[in-house]
Image (cartoon, rainbow, N blue to C red; front, side, top):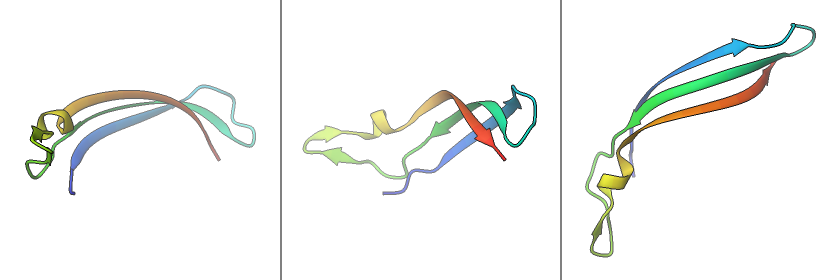
Length: 61
């Protein structure tokens, strides 16, 4: 299965830089399937193509 996506991600440091940075990230993108996938008689391509928005917290050296 191939499902390309286009996304944009941005990270902002939210702490003082000592040994590691604590960062807040946000991602926005769109996923698009390349073929029409079926699960039994049910068409899955409508559920596999959609925009998304996600947030996260992480550490960066």
